[in-house]
Length: 193
Image (cartoon, rainbow, N blue to C red; front, side, top):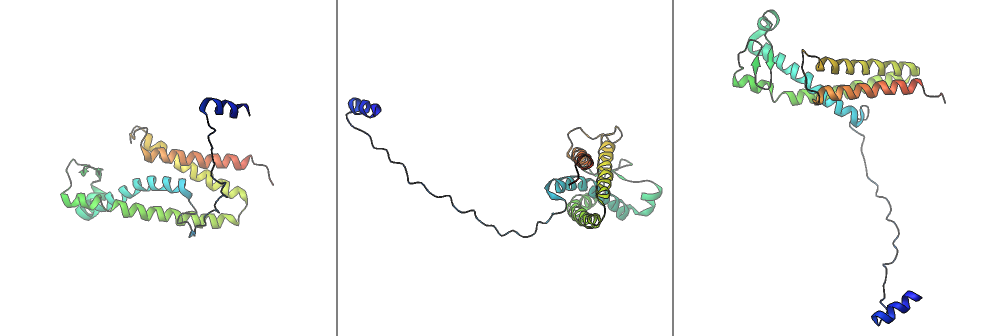
């Protein structure tokens, strides 16, 4: 009341403020969502699978390139390998021809996609198999998977491999292995329901 009087005396009029009418909250929109394409791995698992599978895809494609271009004898007996796939350099110091470089680069993407879908398929089969087993088998499978991912990460970080600290492949394998081992520890200390 005093504020109205002060406002009236100072300004000579009373301003009229009108607030918009209160609106009801809109109903939540329903989305039609199909089945998730990676429901067994989940988003973090797909990220780890994508990063780790690129390493194996590059190894597979480089091996196939040497076998196709130089034959079995060069690969198995002479030990010819692709030493640097980004620069197309072989283990004997010779550069691959330009068509050999094309045999490495573009096929890595479809091979890594096949490996990701293979990981999803395998995770689905393992999950279906472990659902019928006692809970300790799931914990053991996570322990083996986590140890394998950590071992792969430590192998890439070893001085012989020389991966940089923040390289996404060993870092994602390390994080994925740590998460799996954490899930094992959490399931061991969880109270039975």
